[in-house]
Length: 105
Image 1 (cartoon, rainbow, N blue to C red):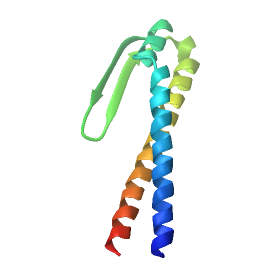
Image 2 (image 1 turned 120 degrees about the vertical axis):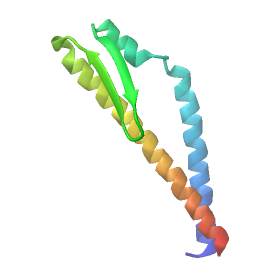
Image 3 (image 1 turned 90 degrees about the vertical axis):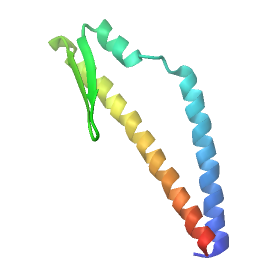
Image 4 (image 1 turned 60 degrees about the vertical axis):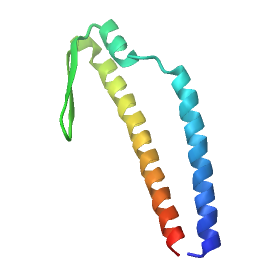
């Protein structure tokens, strides 16, 4: 890859990263602390708890059977947001590798 092309890609990646950070800051202004747990509690969930280990997080609760669809929707949204954040982290690490490789040449 030519140095100018690599430099252009790095500049674009940095610009996109800056835009993503601004959007994340704006989104944080709309977030509600403990919204997930509060929504579940309002729907009748009880015993909401979690444990973590080196490679896993486990969530526990008792949920009324007629609120199962709500639980699925909330979990799907949580995973969707988590996946987006993971993709952003991968892109950030990829940018760092590109920067490092470009500086070696």
